[in-house]
Image (cartoon, rainbow, N blue to C red; front, side, top):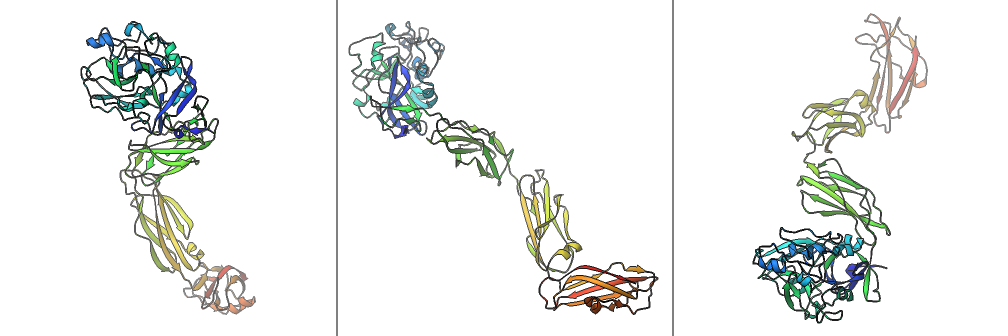
Length: 577
């Protein structure tokens, strides 16, 4: 079962079997973990042995500085070696001039013609595609000489680099700390490095003591501050030394940073090195969806598409947010592909990005949303407060206003009126105008005795909402039904029969009256309750009228008294003559 690179101790050996220099697999040594100033959650690797003898920079015949004309340039920013280490271009294609007087490391430009490398492919070309893709850009501090480069320091950002005086635990150049000491380096012995056999056999320079069993000099990126041509190096004894930049008889031990999440074998190989296991990262999520605009005080729904994880499984997703152009902040981690983010009234812009990680905790690329602008919108306002209107006796009206508190924003105010939860009407209101919530006579009759509510809800097109709830009660103890227009008759009605479908408890008082002069100002009502209850025909006694026509009318009353339960009249039928 693979393990994370972070599990290896400082000093452990690591190999990528597909990365080779001079045909030999490059073996790296863990130099530090989570080193200060280096990429977060990274592991620093340094070539375990010297890979090649190369100069730092070729001499520059057209340079105004005599030392650089004769012996090369010690400014790391412009050096041939820095450019070569970070190029994957082919032989004779990686070099481009870094300043007007710059020259490539050709045979004519290096010391006694030894070990030119213009015709060698860039160092990155010798690494596998997986290794190249995994290299983390690292910000490095480099001292500058005080003679022509102004002293002090500058920064460079590289994927492959040389160590500094400070990082190998030697004296700071000109009192400038070029980073901090790497954990691997604690004394002279820890700085010793031996060339590989391939380094020795491929070098055109073969001096005394240079072999594949003894320590040799290796370059640092630090210039000698007091001149323009000398560069610091680690001596064969592990102490600090230096030589001219164009000397091609000193070794190169590249460094790089990889994510500590990268996997390596659980056990070392026969040489004691752990092998990097390249598991492809998940694909970037298939799109990210956000609201077109955001409103402060509201929740924004963010959703994203799926990722796939070759040779593994998706472990989850990480959603991050940046507000007002600030740092990215993690706001969601998990397998879900949606998140509701509460928008602060302190934000003017927001952006989201999401990436997947697999079950080995390897992260894929981000999918990023556009920059979204935040609108600051307040909820609409309904005048007054929630209140109890008390007991009502019949149909009534209630007036109210709804207001847009943000005059600078054009808003659509949609109002919904409900009577005890049932929608009465929905309409678009005008801000500040008076609206009337009417409980009609028909609606009143449908309400049972008890407590009821008038609910007014207003929403706007920015997601704002407000609700007002008014409570009232109904406690009717009497029902009276009468025809609004009597039934006209040619002559006085003298007899009739009526059928009333009803539910009336025994304790309630039930009265039925009729008249045959219903158009009179004061009709003559006759009680026919008993006949209706018994289902019999009844006879009218009245023979007088004051109106110009006869008209039959009826009046039904129910008094609840002490009766309990529902009381209703469902229908009235009958005939008369």
